Each structure stands twice: as structure tokens, then as C-alpha cells.
Image (cartoon, rainbow over all chains, first blue to last red; front, top):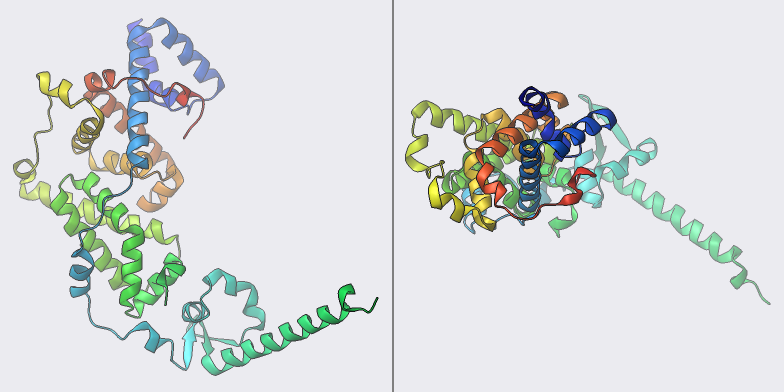
Length: 157
Length: 197
């Protein structure tokens, strides 16, 4: 029996965590059913998993109120982001921040956006971006007008 | 501007331009989790606070050149892991580990008294410190921080199989070293064998 326990010892943790598949799981289950020591080990693994799950679900501790200030005091002084967003040329990250959308939302728009490539990065002139926004506004207005004209509620009875 | 509206990646980009509120937003979103992670890794509350500061100073320092090749949180955990492992290595070399930490062995009645609720969790934290760093890191990321094995592998930049092996070895050592306390821990999830949480 001891040899068998040694053979199964490596699998007990995976068994308790339901990480074993068909044949292995059945073999371990059969052994555990007849071996009180290994059954106790499985219960301990389950208790450990239960403890870990409870710990993982616990809310994280609050940060000391002084932490943000302590970190900031260790950083070099730089210009505020608002000033950077006033630059004539923006990176795509800055464009996304400027438009308040996730970066990935810009990707489908790239074919029509006024971007240019420099040093392997896509850049956008602020003026060109504003023109692009105005063009989209015009198109949106046209679509809206068209919808108003063609909807049944706008027709006379 | 409501910085809470931005994604982690956008906040990181803004941090690169020196936006202090972006740092506040990232700290509010992830600071507590990183503090807890550091505490679990190094086992000392004061060291964990300093390490959390180090992590966010590094994050802010790298923000300007940062490019989102992975999820921000994956990168954040990687920075935190590196900070903690460097700290542990330094502590090991200076041999001060046993001076500032509580005794890790639990014997006699004390062991039974501690085998309850929060004290069991505290015992787990102390037993974690006795694990080799690779096993401890894998166990903390996978079991206590709730990352998948794949995510943990990306954080640690190692194969997923290595993460699984280290988690398995950590579980085994913890199960053996906490045997008596786990026996006393009371009812456990009977459904745990059927499904993975």
C-alpha cells in the first residue's frame, strides 16, 4: 500500500483541484476511497484551496494616505498632461486620451484618420484631427437628416 | 477631467506626460492589490509599503517609453515580482531575514489556537515565506491573486508548465507543513473536485 501511496502522492493535489482527467482521476479516486491517509491529504488540499479562495476574494488593504505623496516626491517634475495635449502633433495614445476613448477604438478609424508615420510611430496633427472630427460631424448630421426624412412618422397620413 | 474613465493603458500613457492625477487613478485601482501582493511575497508590512512605492515609481519612470505589448496589469505584476524577488535576494544576502520576522514554526497549543479563521490565513502567509521564491511567486499569483496559469506565466516570462509545476510543489509543501491546522480547519468545499473556481 505504501508504494501505491507514493505513486499517487504526486497526483493528490491535482485531484483535489479537479485538474485530473478521466483515467487518472478514476484511479486516484479508487485509491483514495480505500486509503485513509491519502483521503486525509485530499481533505487538506481542499481546505488549503478553500483558504486560498477566501484569501483571494478578500478586499485588498487600504493604501496608507501618505503613499501617493511619497511616490510623487520621488518622481521628476514634468509638465501637466493638459499642456501636452495642446501640442501641434499628437501620438495615437494622446489622440485617444484627447478624444476620451480607448486606444483600440481608434484602430478601425485609422484608414480615414489624418495620421502620418515617423520613426515607426503614427502621429496626428492637431489641426488635421479637428478637421477630421468636423467632417465626421457633417456626415453624422447628413445621416440624421436622411433618417428624419425617410422615417414613416415624418410622412403625412 | 475624470481620470477614472480611462483605461490602465491610457493612464500609463498620461503618466508618461507627467499627469499626477493619472498616478492617483492607477494607485486607487491597483495600489491595494500590489501592496497585498508585496506583503505576501516578503511577509513584512513595512517592507511591503516601501516595495509598493518602488513599484509605482518604476511604473511612472517607465511610462514615457512604455509601449503596451501586454496587459498593463501583467506588466504591473511583473514589475512588482521583480521588486520583491530583488528585495528577498538582498535580504537573504544580508542575513537579516530572521531578525525582523515572526517565528515561522508553530508548535503545541499555539498551533491549535492559530488554526482558526484569520489566524489560519496568517499562518498561510508565514508558511509561504518558507517556500523557495519560485514556488512562492507562482502560488501567490495563481492561488491568491487569482491569475490563470497562462497569465502568471506571462508575468514571470516562463512556460505555463513551469508555473503549474511550481504551484503544485507549493501546494504539496503547504499541505504538509500545515497538516494539523488544515485538519482542524473544519468543513471544506465538497464540490471542489468537480470544478475549478
